[in-house]
Length: 274
Image: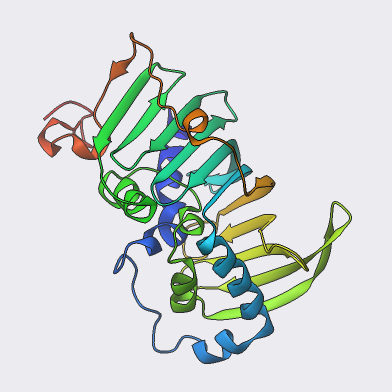
């Protein structure tokens, strides 16, 4: 039971830098004594980072596979890694589908279709749905900020990615050129107010990230989240066959946690309903 609680807490923590930043005003501005931001913006490393950001933000559609892992710091201080696989399809302005398979075998699907947001837990045969009209940027903000749901690395999938990086990145550096699958990738390291991150970007061609590592330096134990990207496809196929929120007739509809009144939530002290 303790591990489950710690996993849930870390799921929320993972959003701190790469998702909360999507919503204007969701994070504090860098402190006055932060490293010189102008110097960071002018560095060759920042140029590489912005090359990636500009390219991603302007894509009309793509699909990608993310194999990821994240640390859950236990009360003893030990870090336990959990993992998941995500198949993501994005079609601007207002279509996004994410299929998730966790390392314990649990499977789920998230759909934004311009009219609503739906989440189906195939393992438990349960689903939740919320009206939401708008583009992908607005849907992601609503999903994370208002519904308090988890969508790792969501900032990579919004059109404001370049502006977010320019605002929050304080230091950048090129670590080296790494060979991944016999191809050269620029290994970058960057720092923000609360998170250090590394990203691997192709030295030439489309600047689609291959790997990202986040370190939550202000969290106890400095846990990490990492993701490897594969199977990038900039023409993923017919929209109708990709975006389908098919829920079985016997599936149980439940509310999003954020939609449950506080009076109906279990008491933290007793575990019983108030």
